[in-house]
Image (cartoon, rainbow over all chains, first blue to last red):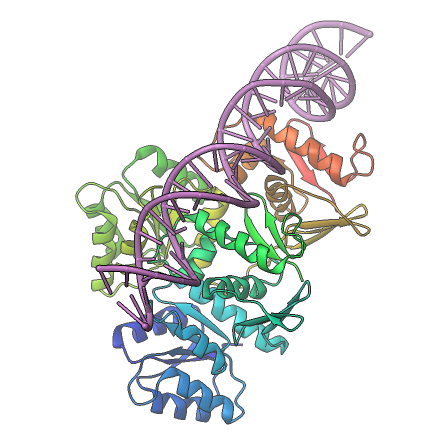
Length: 227
Length: 227
DNA sequence: CCTCGATTTTACAAATCCATGACATTTTGC
DNA sequence: GCAAAATGTCATGGATTTGTAAAATCGAGG
């Protein structure tokens, strides 16, 4: 037990906040203030999980992550993307990150994701990065989808929502959680916004959107994904 | 066990309700009726968790929380924000709160968040997430139920009630406890409402609802679940 | 500044769930 | 066994939640 988590983050305040939080949870915390040293520590110390900021001096999060993967390190990486860098998620997931969190995020959300990644690692079951839902093949990392050999266009938010539901492994995701995880808590669209995105997702991936077979609604709770 | 929780809340009714609830759960409860006294007690008594109302005389929740952090207190803070003060979420987490709850909330949710914030080191008994009753398989986490291979539909309230009874591990659950835990303090349905939900649960999960084998009534007390 | 697509809001209809109270039935205490 | 209290049951109106289309807003390019 006592998993070791490496924090790679240049901002001192954020770094110490994360360190305090995680050590209070009983994790062992390592940290690095820039990309180069982060990569070095990651390779030397083989932590169980890396929290990786994107914007950093010397070596940014993408490059670091890509380099890690190139060297065949399988350590799970949770990327921290600032608001406004939302589109960077694509690059982040493409470079081999396992999950991302939009800053600012609630500590509970961070802990939940960290636990999820650690749990997966223990069970040695990789994150789902490709989904097949009713004839539609979805690549979450590359953010592409095809039906047969016709590409289907999904928006960034739609991919993000799908991803969250896929990670929930069939458990319902509340609207609040969608907002927290996909939008970041600093943005507060109406919860009805979530419903609209669900509707457009259904229009795209369900053969019969009126009787959804995969994107189920859980009345009074939220939505869930059934494979 | 026996963690100490400080409630900082100016409304007497809410304060005593929270105090009762938490002490019934076995926590030791401290409380303060305004921000100044709250801050003072927080610093002097070093509680394990603080429940912090935002709107308060003298010193509001944000200021209090920020001051706590400035003085290097790492005590977890769970903010209670009234509905409609959505923007307060931002300020709350910015000022160093760890999580927030939007009023009105169910006690079940409050307790869950509180437990989450109080160190998870004690891997407290993981809640049973799957039940088999009669021929019915119930997945509390996914909120699904199947009999054979026919899905059976249970509502959110029904799942919540089942979950509560499952947690009670065969002990009877009173109607008041149902109302508190499932409905929350802001709703006051008749206790007869509970009976109705029990009835519909029985209709769904008992082979012979007239002679329930799992969802037993304990006359004069409440209901209990027998596996 | 303009345009186009993505996102969010808004409004209303539809689906679903819930609360209530009257009445029937069962249990309890005596 | 009897009366009182507790529980079971059911219909119904109403409240809440969700689906969805259309309008408004936003934002990146041009």
